Length: 327
Image (cartoon, rainbow, N blue to C red):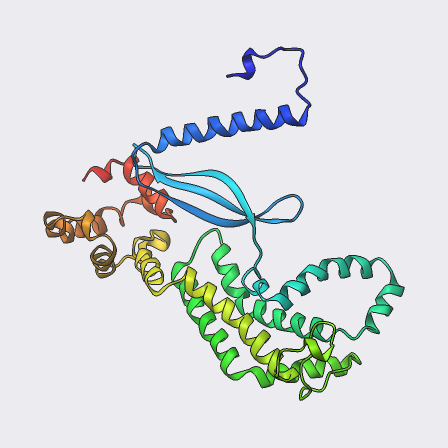
């Protein structure tokens, strides 16, 4: 190690020196990971993580199979800030809401007088966007929790992807009037003045010479905010969960060993190979696959060592340890 050769009476408290030390450690760790991976196949996993400052960041993890046929996962780094509303925040009005919300909560929460003053403010855009994001995040909440569970239930998670898409589409197509009523009802209950929805929507400094639009207040909130926010969410879901990826994850569930291999399915494994891994299985491999699966069901399913296996990595490890992977 480089630090072993360094002076023993040095403190190394300088930020620049500490930064260099961290770079050395990172380099050594990544070199070790590269040596472990070698020529093996690998993939990257990306997930959201929260740091000590409560900022949301992306964690990058490398998954691969080592020379002993064990599935390994190695943490690589943290990247760009993410939130559950990243898609919706691409809409200017939503971005403005979240940029102000934290400051408002901190400012108002420290004084009862400020809390009273807030009640007297007529924030039309703020209330509309706040209630819209509540509805949107409420719709996606079950899916978010399902995707973050340690022990994934792939089939139900993929079902929630499908139902979430359908609910967002239904919200966009059929629920504008219902949502608008809820906003008006909220405003009435809290003595918030609601603008005339038939008025022309005014933006900027409200000078007539700056107004380039010709739509009403209701049209603006309906087509330029409500629909756009939902479209962004649908686009993200469709991008991350294509029909092909959903099918792959659903077929993958056939290999899940949890609950006594109850998800095992010969036909799903055949489909998995045929649709996603045709180049990895020769005709001879396919010829003997049925016989091998028959042996697998009688051998592995009944072996007490495999009784409590609940994940594919654990299954792979145990197959190697019992030398069953060789046959």
